[in-house]
Image 1 (cartoon, rainbow, N blue to C red):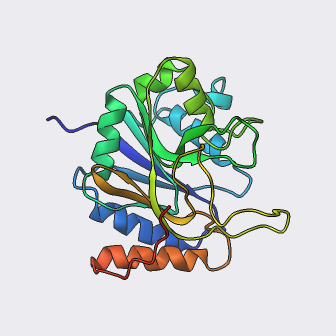
Image 2 (cartoon, rainbow, N blue to C red):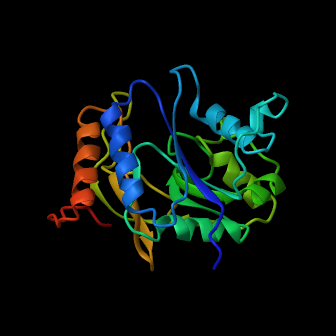
Image 3 (tube, rainbow, N blue to C red):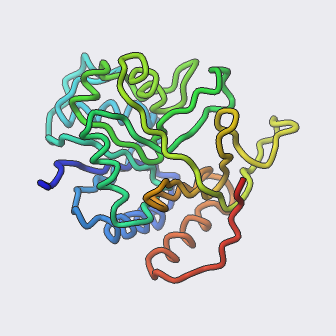
Length: 252
């Protein structure tokens, strides 16, 4: 099969330790035998994640989202864009290629997530932790913005648009997670996990996503909470050395 013209894009802000960025780069290099270009961007604290993703599409030749009327210089030309949060890493040699193949088939694929603080009928979407969509599919669904809305978290509008336009959405489910989410002061009587829709698996900090293909991606979550960058560093270092470690993860 001819190599897919795909790329991987990650973005971070100055409040993210450079060690986090470097370790992600090293893990991506280890599990990227297809040699898809991995673009790691550093943006200012005032640049929203969703706006940057709209800008990236402009760089890739698509007038997108809130920047569709702006002149963004085209510098790239990739058929498939794989979005990878700065606190997410692949776990196998076929993870990126699998997401890219599904995207090239005309579907949106991503790690399943739910925005629990929004009332949107338990909408499960393909999250930016690890997701992929082709340029053509993105255009076909209207090149929506990745910005948050009253019904959506970052990138969730892609799933709404895909569903509205009859485009298949592959939501890769969590298999297990390492620890309960940390709670904010305003959260009361919350269970020690995050919910997807009724009857679907739970997830938390350090969630492993996968399917019949095995483990595909690991997403740290809550990277800016105390101790979470260290959790990410430890996971990356375990993956890089290839050693086995005691599985203390939580399964529901």
